[in-house]
Image (cartoon, rainbow, N blue to C red):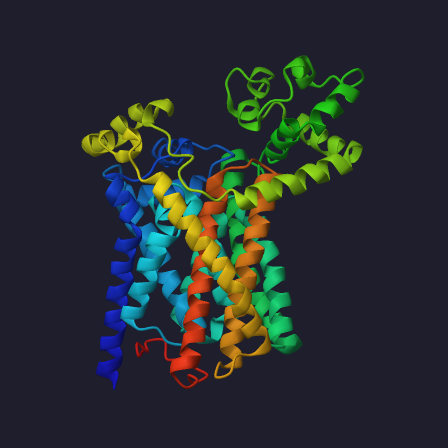
Length: 472
């Protein structure tokens, strides 16, 4: 019996590793990891012992521990391994049992028909957004199906993922409330059960907050969760217009530095915040304008609450439906300084770097968008009847299986909405912000269809599954 269990564990471990390679196919096909403007900062911060408030120094340290100024490929493999293993744990929690062949089929489908492989291929912390979502789902709905080691792993990984990006803290806090409400509605765990679940879910969030406070204190000498955090919503309010109206009203009486640039406003937030010849830079920079940014943001929200709210809703919607991959795959020449950075840090990879399909503009972006769009539409159409069956109770389907799957759907939907608001309404609209998460819809639909098919082909599974069970 023990030998059989060990053999099953080895098969699953091999399937997870192979799944990591399959999820890395975009990077393999490209000939090099995908790179973005922000990739330069993440690669350079740890190497140069730097700090920048808008980029995670901790993610930079994470990838430095993997590349050692030798190669970026280990980063991609670890991205893939994390994604593959979390998908396996999620499938096992929802389905009760997962065979290696079934898991490989699921990974293959996600790799082709969803954006997960493109998210894995980025040298960016984007992968860790779905890690936050799946990690909290597993802790909230699947802790009883995880071993102690798995629970500790998911707990720690979720804390790290939340810490890796400023947007992940509000996302995680929102999901905590959503998961607790969903559990109260779906499986009625009682007050004690809800308190235990709240404690488990709160742990990674509190650890992440403590880590962010510590890192920022070491860099800045003060405890702050998100230094200069008002600039992102300021850029959004300037681009949409309410902050410009507020400045027009206030500049005659308030000596804001940005008043000198009022004739240039509004302008896109990425120009306003990041260009060297734009108002923020010309007026003194982020540190000098930090207090002014805070006053303008709060003053705008007080003076024009209806306009700001309407813009926030519109931006949230636009971000939610903007999920296509590839818009940020710029040729390297457009990313000023990238070539010099790569030559300095990874001189041995310059041949592969220079021959990548991203730089040549030959990645199959248009075809992939069509495939992903069709798969997402089919998934959304399937979720309707699947949710109905889940709520009313499909014959032959265990109640706990229904609850876990519905919990995944609710968690995924809430994450997409919360992510769209946090990024689109409070920062800027970029397709990668939604594409990094939307593959979870395809995952949820695939697991829902699998559950439904099992009710047609097999008797109900036992209420508790062996973590190493690989039966079909």
